[in-house]
Image 1: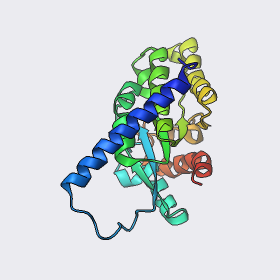
Image 2: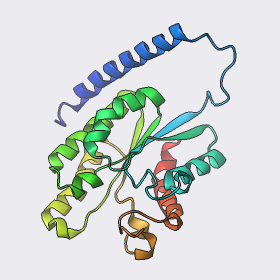
Image 3: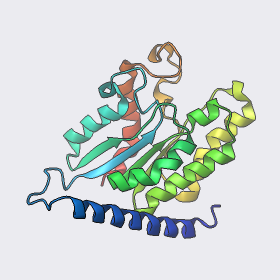
Image 4: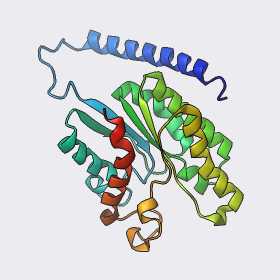
Length: 224
């Protein structure tokens, strides 16, 4: 799969470009031409495609780490904005199925991919997860967007071999595709039980600023 990545990327660039042309042509034919530019026309977009950890599960959306990052970007890098396309319960297959539509819709310069945890919770084949994440990276590269891959870890009670392979999958993908990697989203709060909701899976509001700062350490270098 990886040996043919350059060819796959070329095909993805061609496919995404044609979808963009079709959609933009439809919009031009149906809508009157604007006489003034929107105020944010020069803004570049960070697209976040994740699961409940990025969708602020159990919290108001404004308290999640993605919304907090959007506030930070507005203050520090006003020529950027964040679009959060995260969906609670999302698997890597769901992300792969909608990634082309999302990049066409938002035309991001940076794509943050935070998926895989639900694959592990369901015991899905990791080969399938890697293939799905590779497809997402390829779609982002197909429009020349930079990618930040956000990894996860799972407890050893899933089996030490499965847990180790799960964690290694992110490193391998990042290395093979030249993608920056944040190895473990929950690293700043992993051992702090008070940082989690009653389900012991999703962070509370008070923990979200720590996640924002953790992600920011890897995201900020890409906002150039």
